[in-house]
Length: 420
Ligand SMILES: [Zn+2]
Ligand SMILES: [Zn+2]
Ligand SMILES: [Zn+2]
Image 1 (tube, rainbow, N blue to C red):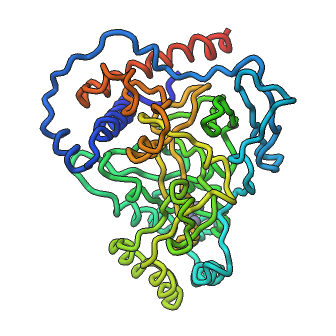
Image 2 (tube, rainbow, N blue to C red):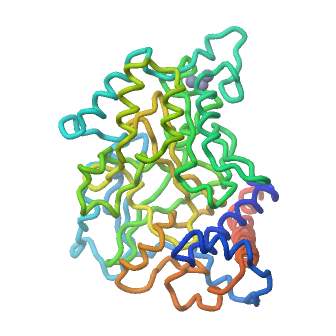
Image 3 (cartoon, rainbow, N blue to C red):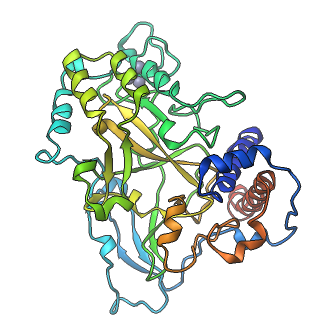
């Protein structure tokens, strides 16, 4: 069984290795320079990578806090506590679990009036980007259909990625995995456009990278393993590299309205200095009045703040070698209210793996003790010292070795018994 072919795997490992290598440097430019000039000779530790498999094994005495945190029967996500010594009697529900669960981003109509106006205007036909593909004759699927307005916008957004020789841009489609090609092509550049329920295809087409997420394809679990740390999200199933897994949902707020306490939890979704983005707006198939509204909004930074309203996206923990990267997928229109922040799998995620995202070097400094991510090249844990000087190529080899061990275990424990 093959989930991801060898060449694509190699790209995934190389990207994760670059990411890990560069994260040693506070200054990104210094890191990139060092990466280019790097001599390939390092001493690769021969043994012991098994220590870093990081499979999560639930405790036998786990307690179910809630059967379903989402309140949505079609998307039941259970929450467990696996903390030793905790019983139903002495169980404390931590503050981090007290938020309003929502599947969609929320906008405060009073404090974000201009944004709310953009949303209301976007419901008019001349202000929506949508396609008529499935009603056209002959029917052509949306992705790679040059007549599809949604696909055309998807390609225009792809063109905003940093172009570099030898690197193919990352594509966002329904059934094509999204492989990231270049670590310098930061999250900011990874954007795509997807068909929606406004299109004649209703988003049931080839140009909808949100489909797996909207259909709640992957069952997930929320667990608590440590009193000092928040919750974690675990995948009980295999998620192939390049798959969109979870949307990060919350309240869309402009920078002036962002509560200082919530800054660390929030993700930026728009960039006031983004000239390329303004050019894209100018060109978009939308009415001039409406374009002016989103053009004005483009001069403000907007964030998604999950503190009060959010989904399990807010529970994804940090890892120095993460298994998720976040991207922006737009639907229907181009305002900051039309973006979905989406976590995409950076490598094959095997059952029992805690989902993780790299919060960046600043995060390590906020920790009371060492980072608990448990990855072999953790930048904030002395236990990983022997790996801290590996070259980028050797990091990639170590990531590959770990993947192969995990793959074999998966074949052994899951696939072979099924085949029998
Ligand atoms: Zn479509
Ligand atoms: Zn279409
Ligand atoms: Zn469409």
